[in-house]
Image (cartoon, rainbow, N blue to C red; front, side):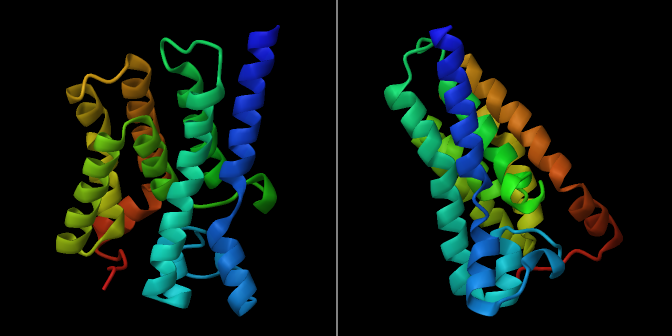
Length: 201
């Protein structure tokens, strides 16, 4: 029973932290607008940039990454259940990215979970997280599409995690998380195919 309660506590608290709508709050506080009615309708950093510019893009990006990393770090530090296989940090990571994309505070709408997802990976393995962030930055810079950088970087994440001999739970999380985030990008993929996707600059 104690193990079940600990798992529930980690999942619920991580989901609530993930649900904090950083981009929505920033845009609402400074402009009074609902970011869900602007651009792509996402609450993520890319859509924040359309409203408030590059500075707030990076601020939102960093806050979302921190939001993703925090529950995973706390689960790794304080959890007592299934510590050998790293299960609770992974459950925290899953709950965070679901919370970001399906926020309980925004009637289960949200962002694409890219920054939060990278934050969770940084918390699981900082070397892998930095590599994925670098891949995202390089691909986004040269293609000028944030969505392309996000999809490719996260698609590579399970292979990079495997190359670093990470626990199987971490590799599985990266694989499933990548599939989920790519699925959240399905409208972006359709726009890319049609040549209608917005470029970052």
